[in-house]
Image 1 (spheres, rainbow, N blue to C red):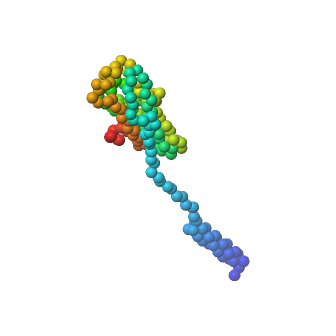
Image 2: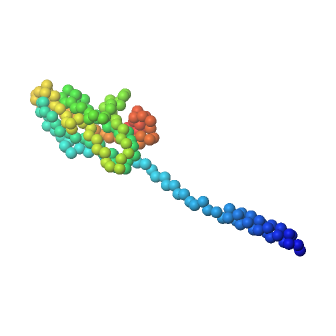
Image 3: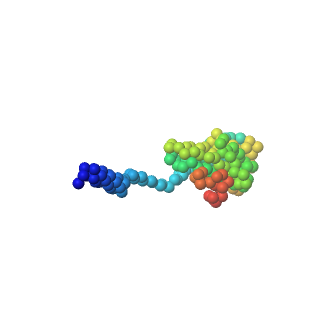
Length: 177
């Protein structure tokens, strides 16, 4: 065999071996792994009051009343709602103002909302301005003593993730309380 033929056979064998090696490397290569976790987002709220539930009405005084909504830390961003329901005749004897930052929901009497962004910490939101209800100074003790039913206020809090709805109106309709 001639030296030239030997070199051709050796070079061919080398090329063939390299080709097989690259093919095997391609077939056994690993790209690593990636794991995804999907969790459920939640909104957790509480409604508390420390000033009690029964009050003595005296004309012209301010009654301390502190309903407060807390959005728990780690809750998703949300639309937060509070519904304030007054007994018939309440406005004749008492008044209150809603704390700044709450907006009345158009078309819904007594429903207020605000947007709360995600936070790792609890976010506490008072409902009534200055935490008080005022007894009108025009009310007489005689009127109060003749009441067949005492004036009442009730508060209910609701929340819905803001990422799932585009507006507070849509959020309230979705809640459908």
